[in-house]
Image 1 (cartoon, rainbow over the protein chains, first blue to last red):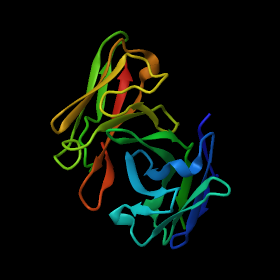
Image 2 (image 1 turned 180 degrees about the horizontal axis):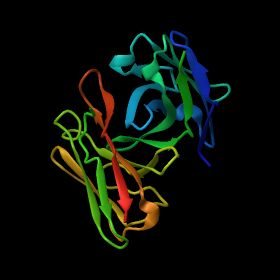
Image 3 (image 1 turned 90 degrees about the vertical axis):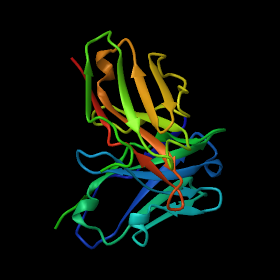
Image 4 (image 1 turned 180 degrees about the vertical axis):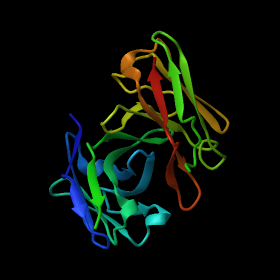
Length: 121
Length: 111
């Protein structure tokens, strides 16, 4: 079955960086893009950006430009999201999701299980 | 504040029909399809409805979606206790080089 498995929880100090991984299985990795979405405690969903697993093209959310980098390793079918200069308001659960391209629009399916990143001094 | 507007809460009794609205603008819902995600407590979001009104395999036909103009709705009929969850609408927004936007989420309580 199609599955995305993410790396474990992280605790970081303000100003540090974090790199979250997302390992895909059950489908041809390079045929889909991966989006990253985060959810602060008790809050809604926020799209962070997208990477094509085919050619590495990216599209980042404007508010994260300059602090986020998304990459893929096609040899291991793994996507990565690195966020730098962490602040306390970056504390959130980070999800990866496969972006499916449909005839009339795209959607996210499935999602990874989520990775809690806590930023605290 | 989220780009798409949803009511923060909704409720119903078992067997009832409830609807959740999602309001946007011409750059998102007005020109692109809407998806709905269900997030059960403590779990990752799950695709519920895609392309306005399509159900993935395995999603009961009690769930249905619709879109008109710059608004969309999710309807749940024959409400069940296991439907208690947070529901999010999402759409592609054509502004700022394009990006995904979400609603703030609606917490559905089954009374």
